[in-house]
Image 1: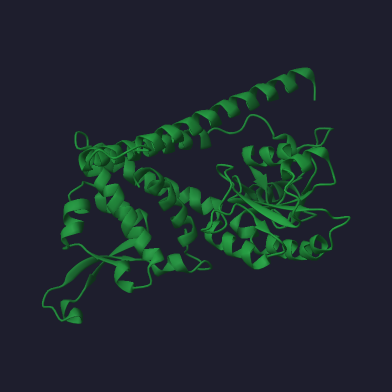
Image 2 (image 1 turned 30 degrees about the vertical axis):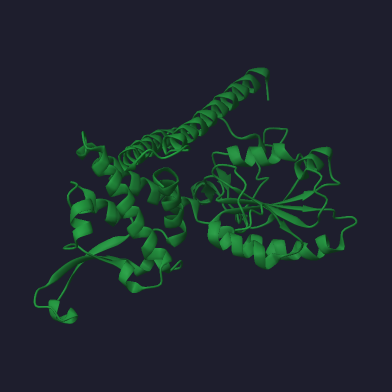
Length: 371
């Protein structure tokens, strides 16, 4: 790489870091808007909700514009010293790191990542097409396994289980990393001298924040506890491409509703909280009644139907409009309702655009701001 290319790459990296800092500042500002201090009354609280929801919509528009702009440089982790592209970090396997925080940081900043399984012998357009198909956004979760390979017998016994989990969670875009603390000073620094092996930390692949592993404020999994690692991944992992598609649909619908609520921010805030609650109840509660919303109901009429394009938000979340004959429920008239699609619960359905995993992630984004 010549001096000019090196200078350009450094400049682009600095610009990316500035954008990341700006987004984090937006998140902190929005969180503060949601009332990090005391509540002064319901009116103030509702106003805070509307401001935070509007901020979230604005941030999505900014993120969408960034997605449409192709990267100007290839991340260093995808390059050899001789500038020949190669895949260093892959989904579907456990990747060994040696530069500690530097390796982890580069993974979190990657614009695209090659997926596992490139076929040998592919040539021309077909090979290019398959390479594109295997590109993906940032990982949903980064799983870091700390070990001492040369002296730790439990670490060696845990290694095959990690490899199997990496294969099992490949389609959910979980990036598995092995950090041998004896491999480098940087790896030891990343471990933070905890001194327990094996040990697993999980990071949100989109934000880089550590994930809690249980309700007892624990931030790591100590010992060769495969069951616990899988339990956390079942709650946190998702398919990034499906999440991106769902996020765009939901926020496009919210933006259109926001434009119809000019001058009435409280109405928009109520809509956001209501459709989010409907979607959350549909995937988290076992009772089937939470998967059906009558259009004649008071809450639906006053909070969703009253907003132009409000029903579009429900459809974006996976609800479908149906008409049920009244005599099925003992009534006399036909009844319109929105029913939650059962396809969302089937991860392997051919028509499945998203699952409850991706939906749960979008709901978390909304609830982080609207409470």
